[in-house]
Length: 564
Image (tube, rainbow, N blue to C red; front, side, top):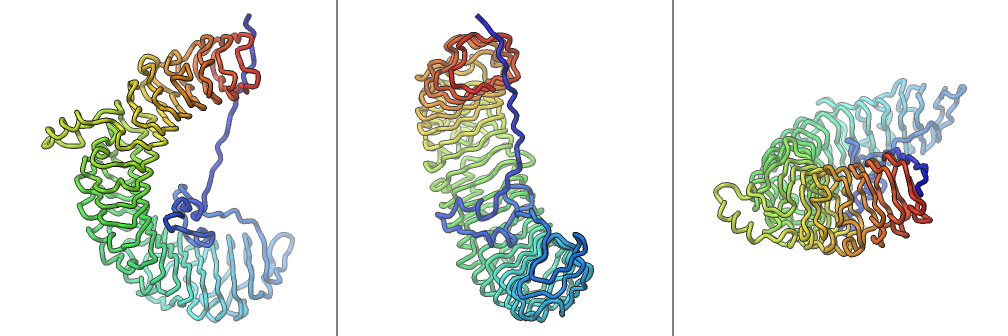
């Protein structure tokens, strides 16, 4: 007998998640990348919304001065002590050289508005170690040459300099954060200091790389000049960064079209290179060659339609490689475009391009046994095991035909744990397609052209530890594929997505014998009835909202399942 049950529409509104820079890059701690919270707070962040942002959740406060108020507004800053901080307030006083004691050590203005501030306000404070003026409309570079400053943080102001500026930085400086100002020029040798650890010039108006502004910086670790207007990078630009301590160069979100051959490998200890969001359309041989310590290379959102021969050579320690989201879309990866880069590679991103095949032509040239995550979603891939002829070109057609016969898909990438293939044009899953991936745990095939007849009965049987499978939003899938209906066919599955298809019926015992299944997503189908004994006893979460259910048989749901 059937009874109507109420099904709950469960809605989650996603929040905005922000990571501090030290948290984001901690994934490379074993490779010697050990950023701290001071690094995050003093200029080392990205302003494009991803992947990391600074914390600017400031309130309103005044401390370290007498701070006289009238109602809720600051009426007078008053007499200040050696350590003071004002947050989110308008400063009514005229800030001059007499405002702060010469013994002051820490001065902080965050999100303030100055009525007036003199350019010599900080010039005589010899004991000053920290000066932070952020998002406060400051228009000039403070003179701190007589101080003992270690941290100069002037993020989010309107600072500009011209040839009249004669100031210098003391040798004590460790952090120079000038992000998001209006700076287009810095004096010769201005960026100087034996203790300087981090320099951030992002979000300014540099058209040319400020090579002449770089002095002696033997302990520099990070240099960021992202989100400017740079067009090219030459060898001379980067010479001052060739130190034993320098590991991280951020050139992202500029207009870079050209990187001179040999420019990058002058930095022999470089580990992280961010070049995403530029206009690089081709990679001449030798640009990305012999970067022996490089572990992270990001080239996403450039204009790389084709990776030509020997584009990347001898990047033996590369762990993460991002080539996704090219515009125009990348359509071709030649078989010899990546030479000797697979020894340590764990994460490869080729998503959001125009690729018609997985890059088996590259994988066949070496062993990629460390690769654990492959992101190939949002392409034009139809067949996951086919070798693409475009990876060889017309002149090497005989080589292509020979390699095509030799190909055993995924045999040189056997340790992939997560494989993202969603939003492609995949039309078929054969019994042996993924059988070389014996440690695969996550497989995302969402948004392809699969249906119940295009997935062979044992399509996933050879994947002993697959616990997450997404087949949602596929092409005209009207019935649950047989490949998903027993423990033998899905021996370890825990989470299964079949939502947003055209499934209309759930016959008895459809999932009963899938003994490891815990979460099942069937929302947004055309299901009209749920028969008895359809789901396994251990199922704990079942999504069925946005269907056409008119009848549910008694005992259809396991006792402890949460229906949504």
